[in-house]
Length: 381
Image (cartoon, rainbow, N blue to C red; front, side):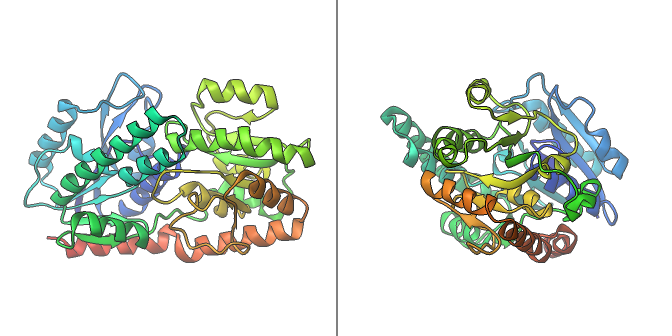
């Protein structure tokens, strides 16, 4: 089958879980299908798409001058339109709901869109935690705007793919039952970090107590880390003054870097091997307070058998049980308390970490779940 795969972001193995999902998905799909990828390529990504071509995926990069994507782009739309004429694909797969603003008409071709984030939910939650009245109203207006736009744009697809039953219920209420909505869990290859997995035996020295993994172009990640540094860390250091935090991810904003220098938080910036950096820490934190969709960073931590402490929003949609495969906390005192509980109990750290790894193997294993996606291809005409 010839598949035109359209994404606003270049799939990659070392940026965030959304891009990792696409990279690994393409790696498996090219074994059975011909994949043509169209994606924006920013200056910092340069020739990163060559890794995809080495897998056997034909890439049509659309270069932009800045790391921030344009709101609209006629050139990108024209590129897709020309590829539809030239390639005559059997199927079109689109990623992220806002990609719809760049798409031409493609009637008569089977298509699906994967919803990574439901933006009207994300903006509404942002408004709920905002103290500034002006910003609160602004985010409420953005929520209402996205509620209308997402409802209109998504109806053009015969099938929507979501990551959880919760997202399916929300979108069914939004766009009705005429559009088919299928659940394909956000999945990764549990053994992706193969070079790092040799250290599962515990021989790797743990340099840091805590770690956080983030793409800082995503605002919930910035807010979550600010919440942790400003609110949770002071409570935690009253009992554990030397507790250390490693933050993995590219392009952290200056306000985070300036704040971190004062209180001793370590930022890696961009790294090639995320797995080895995850394994340098004892506990993974996910202090996310708003947003929607699944948190792929938890799957990445589970892949390394790291115990995870998360807010309820941070692990929403995942198959979790508090105290078994994750610890959940909803305020600064509880978050600090749960961290101390783990750091003081190596047996509990190992138990929670391995339970998370088992959950990943059973429910979020891309090698197993790729068949769910291929079933959609076969069923859509």
